[in-house]
Length: 285
Image (cartoon, rainbow, N blue to C red; front, side, top):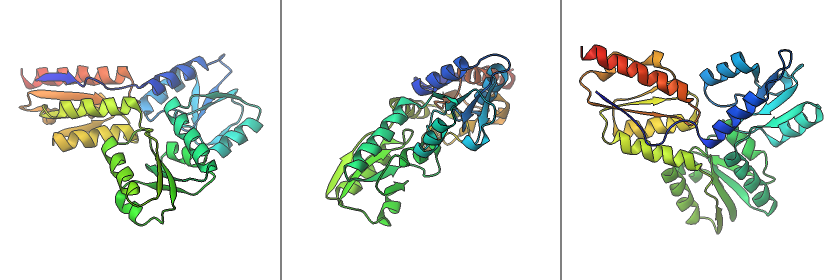
């Protein structure tokens, strides 16, 4: 069985930056840092940061106790929480991805100019919750055109996307709005790395007869890769680590494609590949 990696996969710029920031925030043995929410959506990497760099993960700012510094997650936090954090006197280390800061700034600017905001995204995702908080006007968060049909639309909207969404679906949302709203300002806020990873998995899944997507089960961009892969290769599997691999998946398979979400560390991906090679040896021995 040939094991082939997607042309683009794994850690994006924003995640690499956040990991480096978290590692550099480690102080003495008595000094600890804490991220407000999960730094990235990958439990294995979060555990590594905790074990090796004493970086704790808190659910929200109310859980802060004696930590020396607070790290803002890659997805950002709400504007209100940031203001509260500034009043505590704790050292603030901002690891918000620049691709997330961009829609925050757009929403703040456009809402101040009188535009209501339409966000293509998941209202429960921390990135979206953070971006929403920067608007001074009503915000409409939708995942589909059907949801837009039940939304009372104003005459002026600014539309953005969650950074990890599929470009095709964003275009369909924009097209729908253009046909029904007098003035539409469109900002493509989908991350370049997301687009490149999606295109690479689409290309690989088209020729593979089994696909393995590696990443956190709660990672939006990883789930998007899996859905794209599943649509093109029915034998597609989403795993967090090599321990979830099942040898039955690879019987009589000739090409195994591998991709990974933007928050999946290289060491996890390499462990998966090693286990795939072991499985292949066993199956063909």
